[in-house]
Image (cartoon, rainbow, N blue to C red; front, top):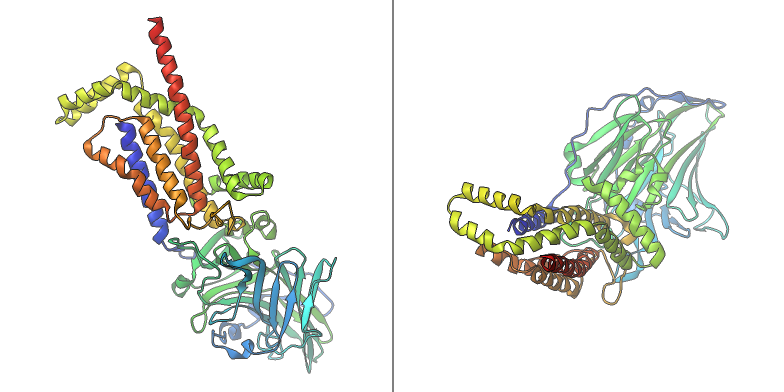
Length: 560
């Protein structure tokens, strides 16, 4: 009875957990008070000296952010860029990166030939990258400056390691170049600003880059799941150099807007599976800003280390970008702490090894569904001894069911004496009714951790299995797998036999397969595949172990 009660409570806990996940919203912890960090001195260049970001008034950067209806950049001439993994459009008006498509990631399963646009300014959407040089003089390059380019179309040449798209802005007193450097097989982009001071006075300049977006969803989204869209910031906690990751949903930026000056770190716009990040040099001071912008948009901005450029001198400013999927084999190589953009929650210590195992099984089989089945076999094999203890406990519960029923009839109205009598029985017969709970306790964290792996791992996005299951991260379109799961759960209950329990508990156990079948109908099919496979293996283990126990009991009887 105790086993059944525990199972009911545990299953209810899982149901409540996923109901909470289906409706929850992410609320970030309010940002800690910012602290100033001393600016390091940069190596001197001929005619170029280091200055702190505070030397550069950036008020013009805090305003004048275009909204969705901005037709200036939307209608300006553009250059088009294509590499082996990216397709981009850069506006010559402002040098803004206005659109970036990921050909390897279809926007949805129903549109396999339409690549997802991570950055976008079409169909009422806005998600763009703006950049420039802020400074003490008006004659600097901003996202309002007009540029020229030698070509209209740029394509990564065969065998080339990278592709440079050079935009030029020339005016009396200076020559500026904005260079986008795209790399083969990589979602990193180098943003380079070069400034030649041809005037008669020094110029103090600081590079800036910012992501501006409206709160839309790019690509298909899992049903009944609230995925996070907002700003991620790798924040310096103290002068000693320790950092922490914080994230703020877009809708919370109105109250939790922040501006922080620090050495190193990065800022990003996060969304389900994908990230657009600004990665300033990690050894330089920069000012990070996240806040609402004009219209319905939001902004994440970095203002970098300033330099004083003497007449006749030149300066070069470099900022890293990452614009693409959150691939687990790359996030650790992009920047310190960048792996935190993969959010598995409190079960990260379990989710990360699970994905590692899945990835190894996928490398062997080439199919993520088969990898999930192999993972389930491994988990069930590791828990075999616990399962054996569970079924031994169940066998003893069946054996002593008449005695338990007799105790319930005698002490049913006296809970204290009933519990004491039950404990005396357990002690006398030498078994622990909670022994059967351990496989369930171990498997639930694995189940929930796998839920996060399927939800957060872009590697499994739209991954097919077989037959009608063509997307393991979406529910079964025909509900076949949930029904099979319900049948397997019903078979397991029948194999366990009827235990002594209250009539109400008996009714709940009878309808539990139906309830969970309906519940799992809305879950990712990969998760249901894991649980269904686990049930099948459990049925085989249960049959084998129960036969083994029957043989042991028969042997004991024969010796008597």
